[in-house]
Image (cartoon, rainbow, N blue to C red; front, top):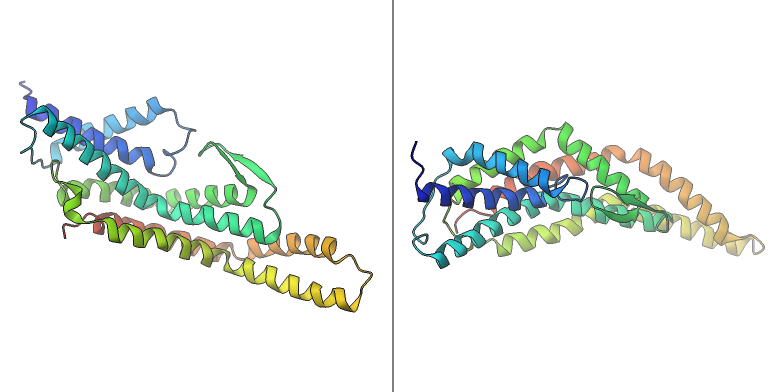
Length: 254
């Protein structure tokens, strides 16, 4: 069997896009999975899809052209990965807002997936959203959309041709909207508790309003978190499925 140099270049470019993609998607983006395992997984996946990938290697005739194509494939892979991660960024934002509103911001725990110390509610919601992501089978849709990205932007096609900047900025702004919507009930709860105890403090001047309201806010916040778990799940599920569509829309040639 003869292997041509062009086939090797195509496989390397496929591996670069795949490796950059697995570098940023959920579960693989943290420090829990070693880099060797992530690299091996990307290598195996690129070997499987390499025969199905179309290629346009007009610039691969010289060394500078190959470097330019390699940088282009890395940018495409990271762009697709960040699109999938948008939902998890929104979940982390919601977790920080909820922790602040119910008074648990000082309670931190280590998130081994990301290798960072976050508020306990943030870590809990991150694991919960990751569980929904895999149980609902969205990871299959993500992998299928990633394979389809080679049909939309073949190897050698520049991602700037798709003009993804405007749509990517819109998705970043959408993160703040989703995170705020998830935390909206807790913001309203904190407002009601503060107003209620402000009135109670005027009616009963000797009452320690601060300490009492702090305990009530934590207790009612945890009860509201349990009650609103279905609402949070619907936001995570809906926007995770939406992110798969955005993956393909963001790289469509303009």
